[in-house]
Image (cartoon, rainbow, N blue to C red):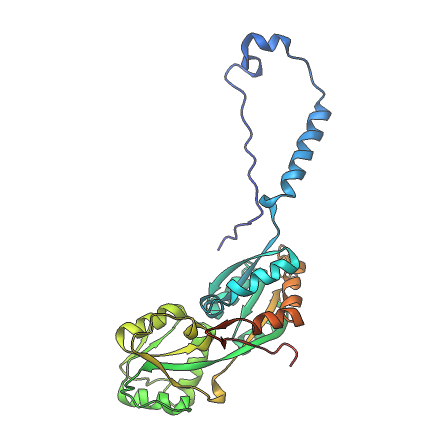
Length: 303
């Protein structure tokens, strides 16, 4: 993937007309007075500096993050608060965590905001990230039809998946190497159904919002993060069936991409975001994001 530099500026220089510069203005050029090249260059450089200080060169960094942080509406609330504090813009590319990590390995992102702790720690251990910072958490929930044909309702995600496998219940998997997908696969493994999830198991290879839409339209079960669910409007006949299991804990982390691997990475500006989001101001902003009075994410950088 080729990274498009948001700061790139394109200067268009006009070529002289046919016949050379003397044809510009016709006879009027007879009165043309020679100019000092040095003065012109100085003015041109001054103009470029003025442009560089303007909005065309507004400082920004690229963040590779999860679909859950975007589709829950968190970034729409959080990033304007960061800009007030820093004057930095953040361009978010929302992907599954696995794809976000791959994007960072290619050097196409400056900072990561994801939720697969095992993969994040390996990313840092392999030298791709500078340091991993825990930043916040919420939880996963099992969503399904209100009439719950597989009988999954309760607080045990492992038992719920065992029942889905045994009844061949319709289940929509993200199938996109996201943090949610990684968690789902761990739960299937714990349920002893890693290789036998039932004939109703389908992968969509999509983000959290689209997966919920498919489940809503087909009456299927799906594992979701609570943040996206609370911001999801097209619920149809879906309801929360399994919640409260400690295994459903969902931790998020932030990391600056290692400039030793990719020297073009804007590591200093990326670190400004990390420092802010784990600071009391950033943590308070996370806690302040609510839908219908319900808090979606819980800051825990200090823990």
